[in-house]
Image 1 (cartoon, rainbow, N blue to C red):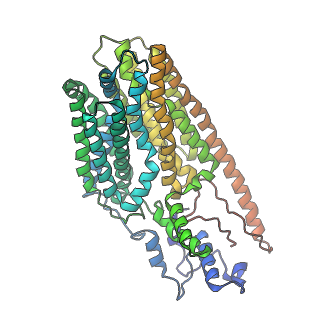
Image 2 (image 1 turned 90 degrees about the horizontal axis):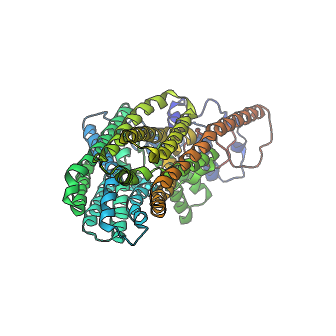
Image 3 (image 1 turned 180 degrees about the vertical axis):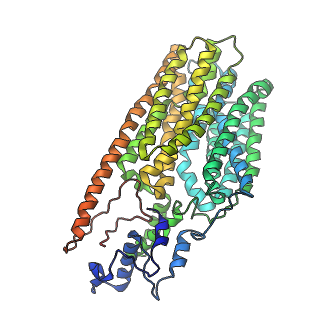
Length: 548
């Protein structure tokens, strides 16, 4: 049930399934009138009905318009200037992840510049540069969601792209690893996060009917960057030196800062980001009503704001917690091939000059995988999509173990193609699974928290792999151990649909018993916390007990 259910009720002011005289709470005369009115409004909203018109309550149209930002009748243009926004979003996604996925080449250049023959932990130290940048993109996701809701897409994206540009530019002048941890790992990583997330949100302002097509175009275009930037680095930029390389890469983010000016929001900041009922603004009126019903103090208003931007309600859902734990476990070795693969090829295939081809293979197959598996995922019912992630993580683990076993370059290229396909499948299924687990009202928060949880293991994996290389003198142990976490995470994810189905059956049985009980006259019980099944979050859901 979505928030649009409020608009599908009769215009008489009360729900057809609710008789005013049957509600025991409406017959109380000892409670203050204002409190009764506030609780009654919450009850009607929870029941999916409009509150009755009165001289003290706003008109239904005004209330719905306030909940939807500019109203439920808003229709995106489905084109026009929106295609310029699509191009800007494609450039943003492509430049950020094209640079990140090509860090294997930059890693080799950094090792060559900062290598110390007497230091046996040089691989460990250099790997932190790229790992910090990738980790910060995901770690900042919950905060970026708050900034995007409060300041809007354009201001957030322009500020982030400018920060990323300054990070890459200052990295070109840095002469120590510790300084590059800050300039590339922190500044560029945080800036990329602030530029990346609004580029996805803004698409919902200009497209709804074509949103799937537009996301596919952005994904495919971004994959072209992942294929082209390794060629640029290897053939053109690398001979110029490391400083010039970072300066040229910074131009990508400078262009992105200019393109982000096209992110003109058609819906107000803080409400209606994307389809109706998915932004935090839709839940704000009920949250404010709840705070007012408790007390009108400043502390309650502060708590209401925190509940709006940092909603931890998704962690009350056990299947979401299990899914998030499985994903965070699986990505522990996720970024290892992107950083260490080029150096592995340099050590094992000394005569080849085609090492950059492997990164092109990963980027191309990842783009194909996102498009293909996205279409397949649309055909699968409910949470069976998780089994696609289970299979992908299992294969990714096996392919990581296979990397040091490849004795010919062509075999390694095949492994990289399979890795890219699995990568595309895992990323494409993230949002649909989140919607199934927590419902559309909580999906944005659920994805933000998931990306934040992913940042820690994803950051720690590559440096640990570098430390293992420095200790054993080769990558056999590093790549073999990097394949274990994805398979462990796949085992955890396997049980999520089973637990979800069991909880749904239990909830359906409880609802049937409750329906039978409501048909008989009974004394109202004391208020208890309300429960809600996965995938069926109601707009503005609170813990206020309602009796219909």
